[in-house]
Structure formats: structure tokens, C-alpha cells
Image (cartoon, rainbow over all chains, first blue to last red; front, top):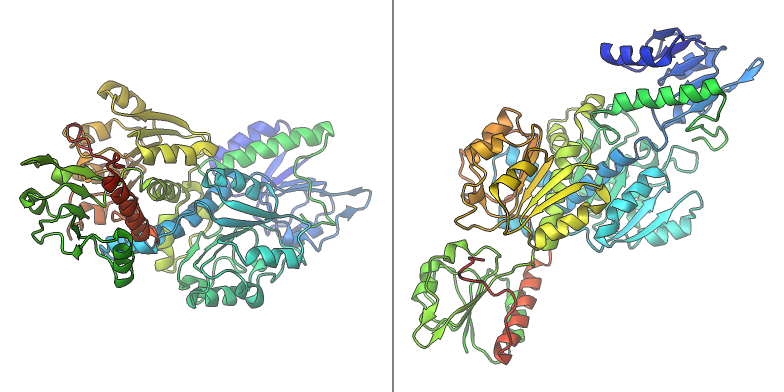
Length: 302
Length: 302
């Protein structure tokens, strides 16, 4: 069966992948290029996926599946399996979340900016610093990222309230009203779009830190910037935005106490190698006919 | 017995302290002002301490004792007790240390600088990011800060090597050669001055992150900046420097991948209140004649 790869790989990485797949023919293409391979590795443009009538298995290089949610997955004579990288980014994203939360608490973002201006403030910085220890943390999303983050938070003796798929608006709002830190890692689904709008943000505890490492569509970005500008919120850690790259005039470039991690949360030096390993392991399963790791549930949408 | 206070306090804090001490007369003074009180709370200038022949108890508002190390503590008829705030800063400094280490690993410092320039880099950031999980961490100093940090590091499954007062040069160098992260929290003593000089820094593992949250005298600052500039080291978290405020032309203002926390590591919003509480609790002990908390051992020097 032929394999099309639309991940950006350097020469060495391509060689490693070719050696790994054995006797399958491999082609490397761009995400927007038409493609008729039975196996596709990467995130091709949705219309390329829709037009590929030979497609049997699509291994995404992301967790997010939102852009493909509207497609049909039945082909004449067979259906398509789609796998994502659920769980793959738990360690790095949880570390980025904690890095951002601690940075806001301990003033690292302000201290970095002070150094850029060669400005020594010293003692007066101290009174504005906060401790994470003993805080109330709301984890919105019960997936692998927040599970890992809950582990990392254990020695901080935080009170942790976690919401999974069974969340209700009432229970969430009640928890949000006392939370010092909120970490959202939920996928893009009809229920999560715009969930953190001006009204909900206004109900957060004054001084709270809001973190979004799931999908940008969760948040009304103007309302969040507003809550930061009026110091209703103490800070924000934003890995994902509605538009990426962030447009030039966007409010997130200038909102105070906002750490923008530019969708790098899942990154690490060995990320590409690990993705190739993951694909090759799933390919072995595909050939043996055993269940693939990370199968997307089309009804659930992730 | 009369009390002199040379900590900067606002009106409310002064009132709280006066209420707490009961019928002792309290005066508020500057660190450099002559003072003849039996009890002093704060960090007066060393010559003021030397000239105070009535001094019985000095409660410092720091852990560091180095500037007073050369003084004589016997008075005609009595000797002086000095207490420091050992243990008081463990939580905040450990959180600042972890904030700095995670920030360097997850690129928070670079991402903050990118936002200042409104520069979206996105995906290419990812390959430069590192995970703390599974690293080898050397904790140099076995006091309360590194003990707390060791707790915070537990869920990261790091290999941790700790050195206390029994450290030897050989064992330290052996550990440093494989350490991904080094965190020094040792006091200013004859043994620690200049211990991390160009030679020792050159033996650290390439890419290592060096953190100093003890005393600035531990490090040859020019050599450290050099090791960063030549990318022998991956980063540094520096809370303490030889001169504070850091002089205008100092290499730490521009050294790459250096997070300068301006001796704010021990800070938190409730710091002054907690210091007043600590002093009042020790004052009750002093009056009862029970041992004071945080007594400095003059021979050991901390």
C-alpha cells in the first residue's frame, strides 16, 4: 500500500521514515497537493482528504481534528480510519502550562521585559508575586494533558477541581468563582465554541489566571483581553488562538499579563523523531490488522 | 526593653507591629541610622550594629548573614543573639527556581520577548524546547529551599543529586558533568566564594542550565556570561548577583538565555505581614527566655 507523507521532514528524517516502512512506496508532498495514497501521514488540507477516494488510514500529526469534522469517511467498499496524537503532547503541554502559571506568579514575564530594558526594580517586585502553593485550580478537560498537569501540581497542595465530558454549566461556574487558576484543554466541539465569553469571564474570581491550551475557539478573545486590561484577571497563558499566526493588530499582542506561547506547547527537540516512531508503530498495527492507537471517534469529534 | 525597627513598613504595618509588641517602646529608623536599642528588627548597616553596645538580639529580615560575618558579638556583660529567616523563603524561592527552569525549557523567556516585538514565530519555536521530565538535577545546598524544590521536582521523575555541607570537589564535579540542571542555594562562606569559576563552569555538561538563588559571590559572573554567550550552557536563572542593583553595564543585562529575577525570589504579596508575625513569635520566645528560631551559628557563618 502506498504512503503519502505531508509532514515537513529534513533529509535525515525522511531516510529514517523510508527505512522504517520497509517495502511500501513513500511519496513526500505538501498539505495542499492532491494525493491518492491509501495511507497518509500528516495534516493534509481537508479538500485533499475529501477528494482522496483511495484513502484507508489518515495518521494526523496533531490532536486537533476540528478542521476535518465535516468530512464524510465512507468510501465505496471501505471506510477510512483516522488516528490523532492524543496523549502524545501530554508531557510537553503540561510542562508549558506549569511554566506559564509559575511565570505569572513569580513575575518571570515582567522580569524578562525589565531585563530587555536594562531596568533594575528589585525589592518592589516582591510584593506583587504570588505562590501557586495552596491555590484552587480548575482543570477543564480530563484528557492526558490535564491528567499530567494534575500530577505535576501534587506537591503544590492545590485544591483541584476537574471537569470532563460530564461538565455542567452550573457546576463549572461555581468552581470558577473560587478558582485561582483555570486550565482549559478541551477540544473544538459545538459545546465548547465561545464557552468562555464576556459573561463567563466576568464570573471568574478577581485576580484569577486563565490558561487555554486546547483550542482557540473556546474563548472570546476580545473579552479576555478586556478582563486583563481592567485587571479583573491576574493573567493568562495562551497557547492557542482563533487565528494562527496571530494577526498583526490582535489584542493578544498587547494585553497585560498575557503569556502567548504561539502553539509551541507540544514542542520538544525530539518531537519529529517521536512522531515518526509513533507512525511506524501504528503502521505495524495497521498491517497486522490490530486496532490503531488514537482512533478518532467521528461522532464525538475527537 | 526597647525595639528599633529598620524594615520599610507602611502605616498599617507599623500599627500591626506596635499592637503586637505590647508595652515595649518601638522606634522606626533607617538602616544607616545610629541605634542603641536592645532589640533590633531588620538589617541595619554593619557599623551601626558594631556601635550598638546595648544590643541583645538582632532579628534579620534575610537569610543572608555575610555582611555581618566579621563583627564581634560579645558586649560587656552579655553576648548578642542574631536570628535570620532561614526556612522563611523556602516556598517562594523554590517556586521561582522551578518557574525559571521551566521557562528556559519551554521558551517562555523567548516567547515574552517575541510578544514585545509582536513577532509570531510559531512552529519553529517547538524544536528548541526541552522537557524537564527525566533530567538529571544537581541540588547544591541541602537547606530548606532545595528541600522544597526536591519535593516540587518529584513528579518530573528527575535523577536528583544533592550536596550539603559534606560536599567534596571531586564528587561535585563528577555530578556536574552529567547534570542537565544545577541549582545552587549555598550561603556566602569562605568555601563558596568564586566556587563556580571559569574552570568549573567549563566542566558542566553542554547545554546545562545553571541556577543561583543563594549568594552572588558563588559565581564568576563574567565566566558565566561567557559560557552562555558561547552556548556552552543552555541557560541560567540568577536571583542573586555580586552587586545589587546590577550595575548599568553588567554582562548579565545582555547574556543570552539568562533569566534575572532581581533578588525577588523570596517575595510574595504577604511577605511583610509574615515577617512581622515571625518577629512577634520570636519576641514572645525572647521574653520567655526560650530558644529563638533561626539562631545564626557565628562559627559556621549562617
